[in-house]
Structure formats: structure tokens, C-alpha cells
Amino acid sequence: MDLCIIGSGYVGLVSGACFAEVGHHVICVDNDQRKVDMLQAGKIPIYEPGLEELVHRNVAAKRLRFTNSIQDGVDHSQVVFIAVPTPPQTDGSVDLTYIERVAREIAGVLRKGEYRVVVDKSTVPVKTGEKVEATIKRYNREASFDVVSNPEFLREGCAVPDLMKPDRIVIGSSSQQATDLMKRLYEPFKAPILVTDVNSAELIKHAANSFLSLKISYINAVAAICEASGADVEMVADGIGMDKRIGRNFLNAGIGYGGSCFPKDVKAFIAIARQLGTPFSLLEEVERINAHQLPRFIDKIRESLWVLKDKKIAVWGMTFKPDTDDVRNSVAIDLINKLVAEGAQVTAYDPKGAEKAVEWNLVDPKKVRITATPLEAVEGAEALVLATEWKEFANQDLEKVRSVMHTPLVFDGRNLFDPDTMRQLGFTYCPVGRPNVKP
Ligand code: NAD
Image (cartoon, rainbow, N blue to C red; front, top):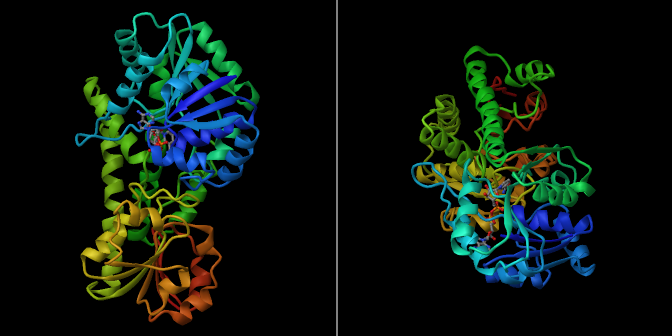
């Protein structure tokens, strides 16, 4: 089938490459000329494992191309996906200006008598599909189209496998013709398909992300009780998670959830519920607990180091999770900036995210020394803080790390290391929700 995706970011580009991989003809559209130039030159603007080879293979096979022209995309596609940003506004509600603009742009290029399915893949509040449909109709009375909601559940860092083998595909549609086309499009993925009405599909996405955030905040609240009582949150999470009704996933205590999705989607769901007159105070608590994690963790660092001013602190990790270069809304970045604000001399290392953190002005390279290796970051450090659980950190030669540090003190914000190993190696080790260990 022929399709286009408007917005070639983390969702649009990876989805486009995966649709091409299963044999469809895909045009990725973006209005960021720099991004389009890069993609046309064979350069991939984001890091996602497996993406580069997927893009190159499908471009070479002439199943994938890039343009800045919505007209070009819509003219050559049966299905038109929207994958543009839906950022939060100051009151937590979703800024839908990108979606509205694309709806108008699509209306401007739809041709009479040429049926198209317009699919919203961006995460949007319930009832947005109705607004997209009304907007296209308002700007093009002769257009023949249906609007479908097809929320995306990929996780950054494993977006390619998530898209190639999804747990489920949700198609929110009120038109049989559109539903049939969508089913054909997804047929090669051999995944369970759930067909719903448009409103339910939109709601599924916000409800799913809010539930995952709730699991994280739940275990973080349990972690605080563990710390106060001397219990070990990892054991507690294993014990809870072995119950199949609960599951172990997303029960990892740490310094809280971040990234471009969970914080904004929880906020959005709270705002949507409020607007609909059905307040969702449970989610407000989820946010409150999450916001509390980093200050609690920094308190712990302060307890050990007393005054942070002029202390040399190494931070491993800047991205919001491993295997991505995405530093948007990363708790690791907040941590670095809070340490800097207290006068600490921070050195930081991240396998993929450092460049974007500087490029997007999220950290000030005059105040944070960014190093080329994890070992360089810890040289002479009075403490090491682990902020993102990259495998590279788990694989470090920790004896070497200890030998170059000024003081062998580790604060593990993601419970990556094994306490016994750390003790044997001679570290004072402070994880989250587990007892501290000393050599
Ligand atoms: P992104 O910022 O990485 O990419 C969005 C792209 O859209 C950018 O390249 C931007 O230049 C382009 N764009 C904006 N306006 C445009 C226009 N008028 N015409 C053409 N291109 C335009 O965003 P993302 O992370 O891919 O997220 C997109 C949507 O998907 C959001 O609603 C997000 O919540 C949702 N989502 C994201 C993830 C994730 O893990 N990143 C997962 C599931 C859902």
C-alpha cells in the first residue's frame, strides 16, 4: 500500500521505516528542512537501535523517501498518518496547534474524488478525531476522507522491535472502508488488532501511559517505606511482580519517570478528566510522588557529602532511559542541573545523549564538564551518581572505577548495581529503596 507520515520524529520516522520494511511504499514528510536534508543525505537525525540500517535498506529498495511537501505525500498515499508533537501547555492540557495546522494543511491538498484515510498517530485527548474531521471539512468541503485514531505504543530505545511486533494495534474508526484499509496495512505485522470507536482509541493511549506511570509511582512510594523500615524494594517488587495479575514490568524503583511521554500524558489525562467534569485525583498523586523522587534522592547525596558546593560529582547518564539519545524531560538532566545549582562540580557522561543535551541548551557545557568516557567522568570524583541504567554502565570495570575515584561513594538512582558486589569492591553504595551498604 501507499502511505505517508506527516512528522518524521521518533514516532513518524521509525513507523515509516517499519511500514516500508514490511513492503509498503512510504513517504515521510517533515516541515523541518534540516531534518529532511539529513534524511535525504542518508543521515539519521535520532538514535534508535536498528533504525539506521532499516532506513538505508528501505530507501535503497525505493520503498521509503523523504520530502517537505504535504502535497507530495498526500497525493501519493491512500493512508495519511499524522505524527506531529502534542506538547503540554502550562496548565497541563495538550497544545493541539500542530495537529490543527496539519489538519488544515491536509484539507488544502486533498483532491475531489480521491478518498483518503487520515490517521492520527500522535497522542491526543479524547474527541480530537472529531475536531480533525470537522477542521478538514471546514477547509475543504469536497474532500472524501475518514479520520481514524491509531495510537502508538512504541517505547524509545526499542521502537523498532515494538513496531515490528506490537502487543496490539488499536484502530479507532467509525467507517468500514477505513477500518478495512487499516487492517490491510497492518496485516503483515501479524499482531492482534483491536477495533474501537475513535474516542475509545484516543482514550486507550492516555489511560495506558497513565497506568504505567502509576505503577512506577506505586513502587517508588513502596521504596520510601522500604527505606524507612530497612526492607529491600527489589525483593518486594519481585514478590509482587511474580503475581501474574500484577507483573514485574514497571515496578522498578528509582528517581522517577521522565521523558517526552509519561509526564505530559499523565498531565494531559488529568486535564482531560477535569475538563469532562470527572476529576482523576489518583493521577495527581502519581505526579506528586514522581516529583518527590529526585529531591529525596538529592537529600540522600547531601546527607553523605554534607555540603555539595565545590564537591566533584560524576553523573552517569543524561537520557531519560537507556538506548536512546532523547533527553527531553529527562530526570537525569534535572539532577545534573540541581547539583550544579548547589555549586557542585559536575562531570557527566552519556553514551548517546550528551550532544543533544548541549544542542538543546538543557545543560550548560561551561558548568558541566562532559566527558568522552565513563571512566574519565569519575576521575577524582567524590561521588558517582548513576542516573540512567545504560548497559554500558553495568559492564564497566568497577575496580578500575573505584581506583580512580577520590572517594568510593556511589548513589544508584536506578538500582543497576548489585549491593553485595559493590560492598566487595569497596564502595559505599546507596541505592533507592534498599539498604545502603558499606565495605
Ligand atoms: P518528535 O518531536 O520527535 O517529531 C515530530 C516531528 O513532527 C518533528 O520532526 C517536527 O519537525 C514535525 N512536524 C511538526 N509540525 C509539522 C508539520 N506541520 N508538518 C510536517 N512535520 C511537522 O515527536 P515524537 O516523539 O515523534 O512524537 C509525536 C507524537 O507521538 C506525539 O503526540 C507523542 O506524544 C506521540 N508518541 C511519542 C512516543 C515517543 O516515544 N516519542 C511514543 C508514542 C507516541
